[in-house]
Length: 419
Ligand code: PMP
Image (cartoon, rainbow, N blue to C red; front, side, top):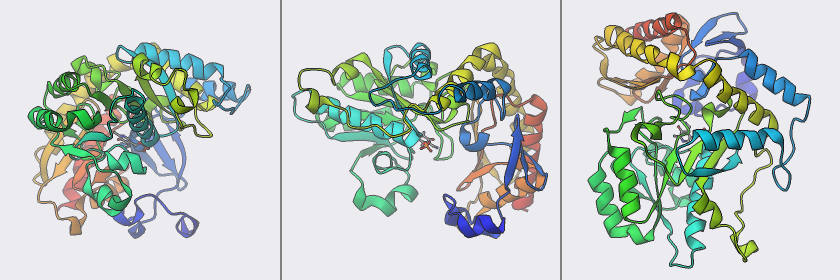
C-alpha cells in the first residue's frame, strides 16, 4: 500500500480524496467478488468500471484468452487481419441494430467516440458539399476523456478546465426533443452529427431520458439530414436489460460506439460501428484524400477479440439477458425496501442494471458520496460516487443473494455516512 502511494498516480485521485484511506489492493477475484491482499472480500458493485458482465475469472473467457495466447497475442490491423477480429466483427454486425454493417476497432470508449466524431466530420467533408463542422451533444453528457470526446461532453467539471483546447459543440437539454428541434432548425446545415448516450446518461449520475426521446432524436436527425451517433459504451451489452439500449426504442444510429462490456471487462477493446453508407463515403478514386486517419498500435488486439467472442457466446449459452430480468425486478424491490426509506436519499434512478442513488442536501465539501463509498468498502462492497450520486452497476451474472447483500450494504453505508 505504501509503494502504491509512492509510485502511482491514480485517475481522479484528488477529486475523490482517496489519500485519506489507502486503496484496497486487489489480489484476485471470482464471480462478482474481489479479494484484496489482506484477504478481505468485496462484492464488485460497479463491475470494475461498469465493464464486467459475466463475472471475474469466468472459465469460458479465461479459456478463450489462453487458447488465443497459444496462437498469437498481438498483430496489427494495419494491412493485416486475424480470425478473432473477423469473427467478432461479424458477431457485432449481427447483434447490432439494423444497418450497422462495418466495425472499426479501437481500444477504449473515449477512442470509439473520438473515431465516430472524426468519421462523421470527414464523411460530410468528402461529400463535396459545404463542410459540416458542428456537433450537437446533450447537457450532462459524458463521452470520454480525450479532447474530442470531452468536446462533445456536457459535464462542466470535466470540460471547463480544458476549454481552450476543445472545439465548441452545440449543447441541448437532454430529454427535451423540442430543444433539439430548435437547434437543428437553426444550425442543421452546419451540423455533422448529434451524439447521445441512449436512454441513460451514466457518468452524469444515471439521468434517465423520457420514453420516446431517443426515437424522437432519430426522427429529428432524419428530418434535418444529420447523422446520429449513439454512445453505447456504458449501456451496451445488456446493462439496460437488452443487448443495446437503442433496441428499447427500435432506433438504428448511423454510428454506434461500444467498449466496456465488450470483452466482459477483461481487456481493452472498443469498436465504432458504422453504416455501409458511411463506410462507402471513404471509398473512391481519391484514395489518399479519403483515408480515415486513425489506427492505434493495439487496435483489434487478438486476445481482446477472443475474450469478446467468448463474452458474446455466453449471452447465448448462459441466457444472460433472460436470467437478468428477474434480477432487475429484485434490485428494484430491494432498493425500494432498503434504500428509498432512508432520509438521506433524494431519488433512486434505475434502468436495468444501472442504478444511481441521489443523496439529499448534497454539499460538495462534505463529500458524502465518497464517505458512503468508504463505509461500503468496510462493509464488504465496492460502490462508487459520482458527486452526490452513489452508483450500483453489478456484473449481470451476480447471484440474487449477492445482489440483495449489495443493496443491504449500500443502505447501511448511506445510513452510516449521513448519520
Ligand atoms: N462513453 C460513455 C457513455 C461512458 O460511460 C464512458 C466511460 N464511463 C466512456 C464513453 C469512456 O470510455 P473509456 O473510459 O473506456 O474511455
